[in-house]
Length: 231
Image (cartoon, rainbow, N blue to C red; front, side, top):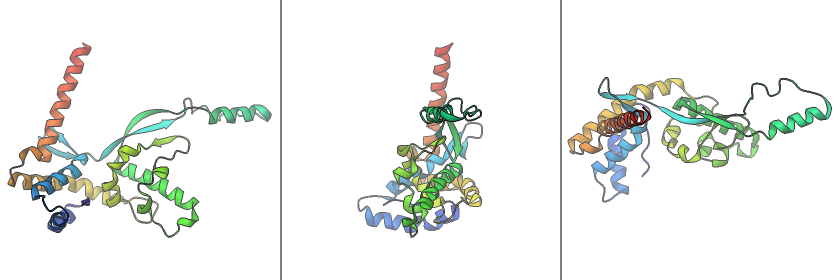
């Protein structure tokens, strides 16, 4: 069973036992602990452990390649006439992309995906009866590139699908900023609820707090080792 991701704590809490019941119906040999571990995996990508406060905090972001042409600032500024102009255009088309990594919010990523889908829908009138969610994982659309801009990694995109399914509008051109704020406000509460349940069944090692704290410590240790090697 693919568990849905909820954008608010109220929704998550009110659907917890209904989803658990469906989970048991489809996973006969599973336990509530298995269900909680799946929930922990679902929500932990949108959190991080803060050493200063010793607590979880929201981090709904993603790293993505920002692809562009080298020296694109100067491309197209000085055009010539005749055959020289044609040669300039051909040379621009043949330029290879370069990229730099950027960290953007999941709201920005969702808008980027929404723009890609709507652009495709506007070009293909035979899809008038289809909606945004029908193409949320259409590889040809998601990974398409039109000049410079964000380059979506299809494998990485798979991990964003639960959020996109919950957040993207069925129809429309823009994402809901208020709904995203609700998610940022609720994600820690949702994680704490899951962790309380995991603590009740004594699955301490599977708690979101425990796992993210351990990952944070590991990253700090690796950073210190790297700096030591460089000095």
